[in-house]
Length: 216
Image 1 (spheres, rainbow, N blue to C red):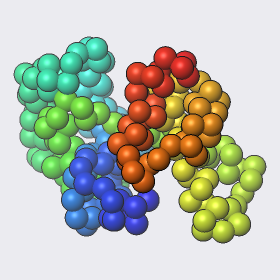
Image 2: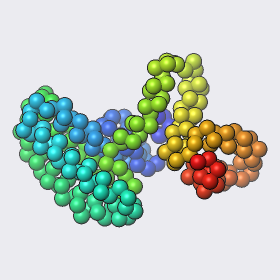
Image 3: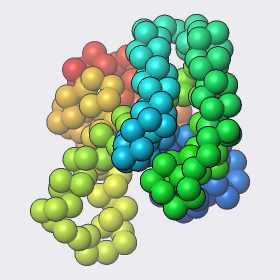
Image 4: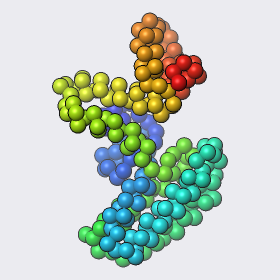
C-alpha cells in the first residue's frame, strides 16, 4: 500500500496513527475518530477522565449521523457550525489533562495530542469521514479469505489478489452485483481500444450510469 501511494496517489488518506503514512509526499492524512474513541475505551479503568473522552467522541459521531444525507458543501458548513466548537472544547480539555505517560489514559492523550492536525482535518472537506471504519469493514472479506488461503505464492499473485478484491468491494460499495459487474468487465474490456481511447475506461467505473443500469 505504501509503495502504491508513494508512486501514484495525491490527496487525502483516512488512516489510524501509522507513522509511515506521514512521510509520503502528496498524501494528506486524515485521522480516525473511531481510533481516538477506542483509546479512551481502552483506558476505561480511569472511569472519570476516560469517560469524558468517550463522551466527546460520542457527541461527534451523533452529530455526524445527522449530516449523513447532506450534500458535500452543506456537510462541510454544518461541521464548521456544530462540530468545530465541540472539537475546540475537546482539545482544550485534552491539553490540560494531567496523566501518567505510561498509563492507558496517558497513551490515549498522547495519541490525540500527536494527531491533532490529522483529527481536525475532517473540517476541511465535506467528503471526508469522521472515521475509517468503512474501509476497515471493506477489508474484512480479505481477512476472512486469508485465513483460508493463507498465502499468495508470489508477489504478482498478491498484487492480482488485491486488484480483484478492490474491484469487488468497490462494486459492492456502489450498489452493484459483483458477479454481474465482473462478467461485464471480462466480456467487454478485452475488445475495447483502450490504447487509442483511454477515456473509455470511465464508462466502466462502478458509478458510471451504464454500469449502474446493467449490473444492479
